[in-house]
Amino acid sequence: MVHEWPVNCPRFMDVLRMVGLDCVSQMRYLRMNHHLLTALVERWSPQINSFHLIVDEMTITLQDVAMILGVHIDGPALVGHPVVGAGRRWLSWPDCCDDLLGSHPLADVVYRDPFDHRITLRFHMGQAHSQTCVPLRWLRWTFWRDSYLDLNDMDFWRHVRAYILFILGCHLLPDTSGSEIHLQYLTIMEDLAVFSTYSLGGAVLAHLYRELGEATRPSRANIAGCIHLLQIWAWEHLHVGRPLLRVPFPVELGGLSVGFRWNEDRLRELPVGNLITYRDELDGLLDSQVIWQPYTPDIQAQVAQICLSGADIWTARVPLISWKRVEWHLLRELSIGNIISYRDELDGLLDSQISS
Image 1 (spheres, helix red, strand yellow):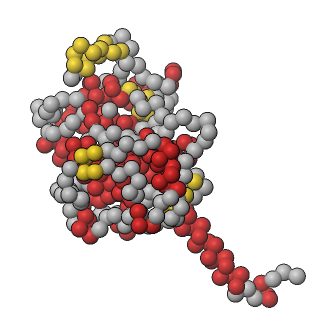
Image 2 (cartoon, rainbow, N blue to C red):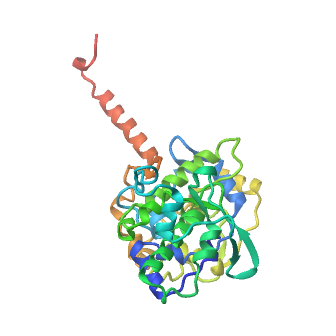
């Protein structure tokens, strides 16, 4: 659904630029190569958050998140406080929704698709009686407009919050339902200036790491998380399954993120491969078929400033936090570093350090 809410209004784009989501808003529909994604998931090691490939261990890093998506990777962790319940800011989740969005889904109301009025649906807030989620389609049907220039300030900010919630739910932090988003994220959007300081990129990566780990379980049949990021990462780093572009590579990015050059309208031909083909290609991968550093100085000179703003922590060994999910970034390097440290200590061990 990510392509179903196009944004072209200058007033709206200015706010998205302030929040740090203007690059994401320009990424268009992308067909998923499910066979390639499955072959990659089969090689994911949850213990070290890396793909185990024949050439070496490889992983999606904070640099990839910043360069491909163009979101903030440095800042406070994306977590909030308990603000819903008796004696708290809002008594219930519908109350929170009414305050920050102006309305909430009503089961007795028939909603119409703004792009096709023949399509009607009834929506309700999800997660049983707790009503902690809203349908993504309800957000689009209720808050999409051709122009936002005529809205007063209060209504305008409500529409912005709805759009951000929509982008989180169907693109950056989707769950396995693929149809709704938890309102916990809405509670930290009351002040969008504060929301813009969060490490959204760190949350996206933590969420994807965890979902990749969950997807390796035999009982799991699907995967959530930012799959666009995973697929574009593979195309940037590996020749396996990479499509041909209509324009020379690399393309002009015009101050956007690297993910923009893989938009559907720029692809000339998608490879036709099956799961067995991709398994064989990954098993026989050569070092010459891997681009270890795809973001050359020429590319970095073309991207938006937000893509480079967190360069100091691109290779930081830190925990990544997405609400209740915590995953380590560059865990393999951390583990190897510890091994080397222990080897050095053992090699220089003194008699006085050995207990009799």
